[in-house]
Image 1 (cartoon, rainbow, N blue to C red):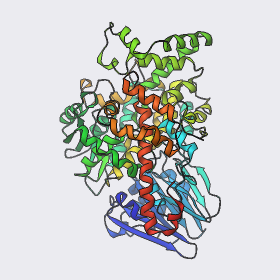
Image 2 (cartoon, rainbow, N blue to C red; image 1 turned 120 degrees about the vertical axis):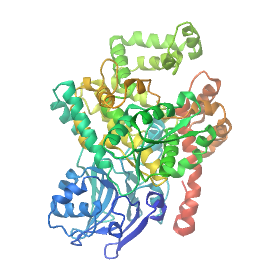
Image 3 (cartoon, rainbow, N blue to C red; image 1 turned 135 degrees about the vertical axis):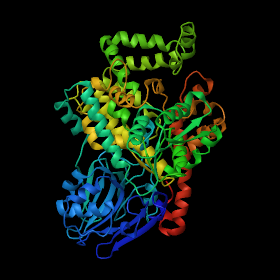
Image 4 (cartoon, rainbow, N blue to C red; image 1 turned 90 degrees about the horizontal axis):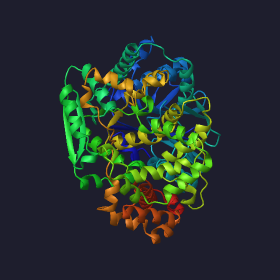
Length: 639
């Protein structure tokens, strides 16, 4: 199991086994802090009571060390500080003092109790479950697949969730019997056949609720300064490393702010990395280059051909373990690979959109809801019917006589009106937002024999105390889309090349501060991330960053009509779909025909199917590796 995670820790490995209880732990180390043997894991506390395997970093370990006088220190690692803090204060009080990203397993020899812990925001992954009479856990599913007797049975209900969102949200997992530990949670277990107790020690919902009652009322200048101070402190902590360090730089608001504050606190040029595409519509490298030049960083960029980008697709099943269909996974892996050529740690700007209102869908949700709410139901249905009487291409032709700015060209007026027609038939903001987030709006009709669990819709329904639909959408994304899509994407892509990605904007103290901000500090005069822009403008002229949001993506829509058409047709063929037995054929074929015709763009919906089909193809290969080492698994079959 440990060998399966060698990419997450190529520098060292270790195992612990306690025959009296049958507990075994394996660890792979990526050495970042204290490169000496004193940082080796599994690590036992000085008293001998606790044993830990720990993935991630606790950045404020030096500060915590000063609060633990008399500690019997053997080295300088944060792992040793974690053990001593837990021994001195107890698990939950210690966790509340930790600033960092982590997933760890802690064995309490005295109480004969195992604790699994995941960081507040879900930056680091942690899976667990039952295999026969054994309790198993790991950072990635590929390790669990190596456990003797594991049967990779696909959960169709979870597959329906994946088809809606393009990712698998916690606590679910694509395999029966396995679950994800949610962010900010502790799992405690006294025996392999006992019932795990799962409890929260930190909650984004409670942080938002508390922030609503503790709103900051201060001048713009004071609030901007406070945010800058908090971000600078978070970045300073994440620049602590005993190995080369750099940053991803896309040229957007978030990564530019992180790099600007890094450079301010660095005595030498910060190493920054960006990739470019030859398709102008998806290329941000030119903007990143200008910002790097202005800030004086040591900048490296790599232009990637479509062929090079597409060569990553066969790597995705092994990289993500579960079906995962955010197509920006491709450039994320490429830029991680580029950075790993020079550094071992890279800071990232992820989290700014969810905390500071960066997605245009937040403002659009409010506008659409206000419009729909004023229109009587019969009139809304009639208007939707009229729109559907015309094809999107016909609507585009009608709008062709009107001047449009470049950012209005995607999506086309026809596609936007068709989406509006869908919204007109929905009568509450939860349904509208769920529709906006969905790749397939009725996944149960696509996944045979499935019953979709209530996840995001149920979450939103529980937040009735939030009166702002924009803040409701932001909280929904922070608790769902951020950990299970954005952070999962970055973790798997970076760790696939043994690169540690750190996300300073998601320091929990910045998160808590952000939820105390009135909405006007996030969205003002049509500008998303208003307060974050004000911080950045202190270091970078507005003209270098003021442009339409592009996103970190690849042109999947055009690839599917062009160089990937044959590849996609094989995976979407009626015979293949029927043989696999997971999907209804006609809904998928209909979208494929419409996409090829150019009348509609179904790249996201089709990508979820294609990624799953590739992942499914990889399952027998994974089971074959397992079968060679373990005859028990050979009997179970791959699916």
